[in-house]
Structure formats: C-alpha cells, structure tokens
Amino acid sequence: MRALDSNVLVRYLVADDPRQTAVAERIIEECRTADEPLFITVLVLSETVWVLGRVYQQSRIQIVEAVETLLGMDLLRFEHDHLVRRAFDQFRLSKADFPDYLIGEIASAAGCRDTVTFDKALKGSPGFTIL
Image (cartoon, rainbow, N blue to C red):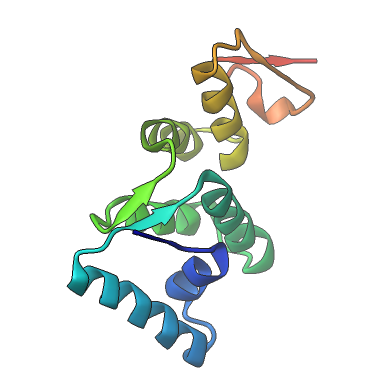
C-alpha cells in the first residue's frame, strides 16, 4: 500500500498542471494495475477539501462531487473510513465545513460527549455544543 499526499489528489481532481496531473494519474494507474491500494489520511482528505474550496474556489456542489469520486474509488483506503463517510454525509447536507464534521465524528468515536466550538454553522449538528 502507498499513501497519497493532498497535492497529488488535487492534481488528479483538478488537472490544472499537465505534467503533475500526468504523474498523479500514472501513480494511480500503476497501483490499480498492481492491485496495490492507496491510503488517504483524514488530514490529506481535509486538506484536499480545503484547497478545492479556498484555492480553486470550487462550489460546495463541485467539492461534493470530487469527494464522491474519491470515496467511490475501490483503489483508495481511507483512514477512519466509516467516520469519513459519516462526516461527508453531514457535510453534503449541511452548512459547516467537512473538517468540522470529521472532527466531530473522530471525537465521538473517541468517547467524547460533544465537541465544543464557536462555529455557528454547526448549530443543530449532533455532537456539537456552540459556545
């Protein structure tokens, strides 16, 4: 198994640099051919979502489509897979940012009764207490 950094995922998703995109696609295809999974950490996925929104100015719909593409790839293995998918489901349907929901899911899985935050976008989200 190999791990991917967010810059490789971003190149793969946005294809904005022909040389780096070709390298990213080649690595992914080599692993697919060798049946070697690629590992995505929660930090890499969070950073990828952030870069798509803040740097590339992608809409929430575009980001949802990109993450759905990644989650649908059998080749990819996600750290805390079930937590990532639950956080993504919340992100898809709500107002706050993906990393916020992921933080909440990881905290809940660790046994925390809630995650305290100043982020008003999380108002009404299960597992969060707004200060």
